[in-house]
Amino acid sequence: MLFNSYEFIFVFMPITFFVYYFLLSKRLVVGAKGFLVFASLFFYSWWNPIYLPLILSSMLFNYVIGNSLNENFKKIKITKKTLLTIGVIANLALLGYFKYADFFINNINMVTNGSVELLHLALPLAISFFTFQQIAYLVDSYRGETSEYDFLNYALFVTFFPQLIAGPIVHHKEMMPQFASRWNLVKNYKHIAMGLFIFSIGLFKKVIIADQFAIWATAGFDNAVTLELFEAWATSLSYTFQLYFDFSGYCDMAVGAALLFNIKLPINFNSPYKSLDIQDFWRRWHVTLGRFMRDYIYIPLGGNRKGNIRGYTNLFTVAVVSGFWHGAGWTFIAWGALHGIALVTHRIWKDFGFNMNKYLAWFITFNFINITWVFFRALSWEDAVKVLKGMVGLNGIVMSDKYAQKLEFLKEHGVEFGQWLIHIDGNKSFTWIAVALFIVLYFQNSNFLYKKSPKLLYLSVVLFLTSIYFGIVNQSSEFIYFNF
Image (cartoon, helix red, strand yellow):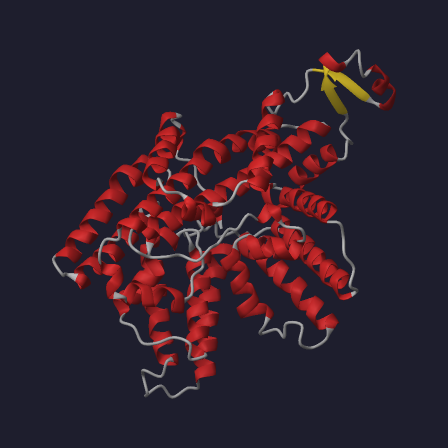
């Protein structure tokens, strides 16, 4: 079930909201929370109920291990460190089996000229997110940073539907107190208004902006055989903005849906294309994933405490792991490695005390992000090379024939005139790109916008009805991060 589907907006969400608060009004707190867990599991199993036992087993296993690490079970005869190791390995094994088994089998076959059959496993929805979330819970329990809560609250922490499928990756300590608080068990009309407003902003971003860019990105990456210069840049920039508004829209809708139940999710997206360097980008893009990588990989590896070389190595390692987390493919690893190189380069640059003009810094950062997204989006190396070759002009340059007379001298330099942007819908794509760039650079994001809006419900209605009017909701296209 998608946030941008009619089933979610007009059936699932209203029923869940009203039944939850009805049960609370009857002082059936346990029943209300139980219903919310049931609704979240129903939401999860809407795609494929066959994987419902998987998340239930994972949830029960980690709850038991976490409680044991909290020393709630005194009879455990192994050390806490051993128990934590067992828990982490079990979680990574589950993730590795379903997400990476075929990747490793395929590469082993290539290296050894073997013929081991692929497993062809369907990737269970949200497995990357609920696995990392529960690993964080186990580590926090080992460190003594979690408290005892009952299983119902823990089940809600894991399955709460607004953040279940694509994050944010939340911490036990920031969510469990909210589920346990009696102040969150009554309707808060301010939260409801804010929630509807933020959800509507996200819906608008997804169905009006992101899905339009998706058409051009798909045309260039998947359908075109070759791309000339302008087509290639229109393709890469279309995906750059599709991904931005798709993920930003999802984050808004998740935050908005959670607020309806008085739950405040952490900020996960904070205008990343305003970044002036690559480190700042990672502080703004998928904030909770970056937080996980820092707290549970970078710092345990030693961070930058053991010298510059070790710090650079750890930084690069974390970036590659982040790329591999996103997908079981060499293009994702390449994307992570490129970001790792950029992060190390930026660290060295700062270590030497160098500075750069902020406009030049933004230009370099944005274009680096745009170029590396090509590897993130491409379905194969061939598709990535196709787009990159076009972006550097190796497949020729074609300009509109209306400029032929004024710019005829360019023919001597290999420029052709004729029908341009054949695959990418002519001038329309560049117009949308220019508008999108203006929005991401000069508009405030929803994290701050809702605090200043006195007419939240009215704005919500306008944005919501606009999205519905255009009828794009009817397509119910998936969010990009559902694939991870």
